[in-house]
Image 1 (cartoon, rainbow, N blue to C red):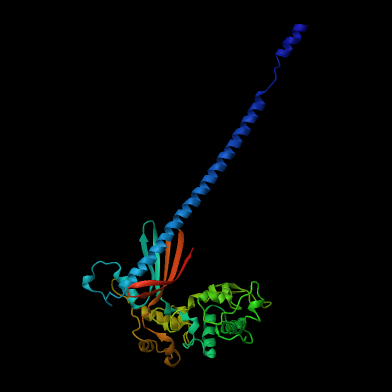
Image 2 (cartoon, one colour; image 1 turned 120 degrees about the horizontal axis):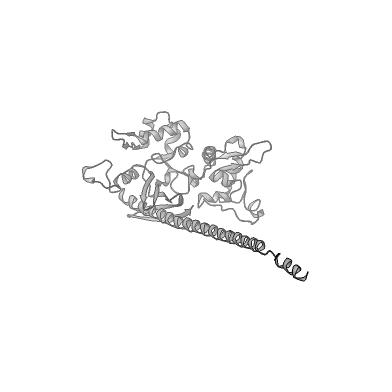
Length: 362
């Protein structure tokens, strides 16, 4: 009997193999998760590194565009108005000639892995907000009329009910006294009550962006976006903004050979159709080889001859065809979809470009 019990015990040993298999599977699963996590982190780090590498290259390209602009500004005084046989295959001749005639927009220059997109536009292609009446803003009626047109082109129409507050606040900001207009604002009655408080400038604007400090103005009005007018039952308005229409440089006259259609529409008697006609006329035609032959206006008199719909009595004092030493250079570098933008205000004199303002953006 005793031997039989012993054989039965020996015939049924404990089963440990199943537990070991479960442990192994858990370990393998945890290792797989760990390796996958490490691979994912490595992938993210590689993408971040790649992005910053491309961003750095795009930034260098954008800065290279500024140097190209310096070169073209120097060369525009050397080129002839029309093509000459001795010009050879110099690829910078045509951009320099275009810049001499008016403005240079949308020049695309491949370089290395990316491209440079370059604009060089005389600053009088915009309205000088410090001189809307050509008299340093002393004629408030004329300033009001011009600023209303600027706001309308920017998408803020009269029915929004904001014109009086914006215009009178602007006039209070730039005039020399501390007396607030009916819907305007001065230091004691408004700006000193803000958190943090500040003072009204009581002088002309240093930059267009300074408008953000003026009562009523905001980023939507200045740069475009959605504006809540504050009136009940009124849908928010979509604005295109006014920043691209304005400058703080120049004598206030608009260069008709370089102004955009939007800027032209801020002038008295110029609607979208007439603005389009002005631009179409100056851009000229394409020759048999598909090359564009621009036809800029030689003077304001020629403008009124070619566009008879315009009223010289209302418009002529605001216009010029004179060249300007101050221009806005915008250079965008792009590498595999990553962009960096540099723009500056430059003054060209004695063969050199003096940078008056510099800004970098994504």
